[in-house]
Image 1 (spheres, rainbow, N blue to C red):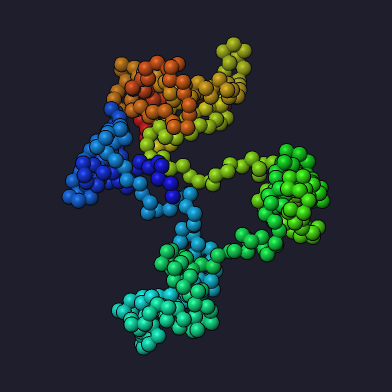
Image 2 (tube, rainbow, N blue to C red):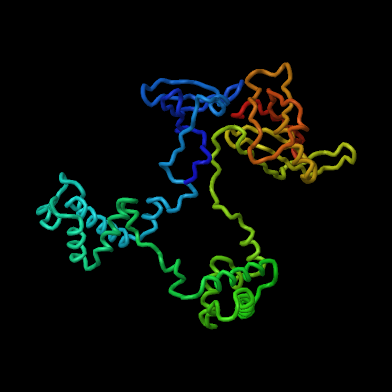
Length: 393
């Protein structure tokens, strides 16, 4: 798990003046964002600004390596166990009981929950571990090395470590093909992503020719025609090329490399969502006096749910309209002198995923007004003026 970045949110821990503190609450104030810290030793509370928390030399974040993350090499235990059938889970539980008996002498793992006759003589406290491995191997009909591997996996990952691994998929279902030939075949398949669907015979012939030109004659063993077809069938799962249409294969190849997941913001301004939608109302063009459609483009802060930019566009949304909404996010208009305090939102900051030329931006406004939208309904002949004066409206 990488510890290069630490997420700031409830539950994050910091070292503060020699003690450990934990974030228990995040506050959004008019002057800026603040966090409430609680000491793990005496339960005292401390309230500091988010800027001080991130920039002060007295605060040092503690990376949390206890929970799962997207870059973990293995899946969490609940994910592995829920993918098994009931019969497979019973086998895992039975194997875990055997491992606990090897380690402790009791199938339950505790003397308080021991069964009648436990511990058995071959698993008594005075018996060496190698003797226990041999006794359990003879009991189950496996080798002592297998039992030793079970014990090691159980100590590392618990019962999830005893889930049988799908090694057949990693070995290519028993196909003994040179890895260099397989890699070049995959390269040839990737090269045809933007072209028409190739035939398997053409991919095999081009792979053989490229292997011969790159490594020389007789260096890489070329598989037989039947084996090559089976290898391409397995590579089809990694990069679809033959089975689906060419357009569908291009769509699959253009998918993001990372996994899909829900954004989990930890502070205002971290993520900004934008969307355009066509409204079920019409606007009257003052020049042509014709009714036209309108599209609404909105930018919303994902953490506070505040609308940070809005624009109503006749007919359809253009790139200049999107740029105008982004400009509202980065450079909000100052609130009027007659605006009440509850109608003014705190500054959300610039999203981390957007690059901005700081030399072209003047001093940012500290206070921002809400948004005002006026819509006109053609059928009922009435208008609506909506004013977003607080994050809850």
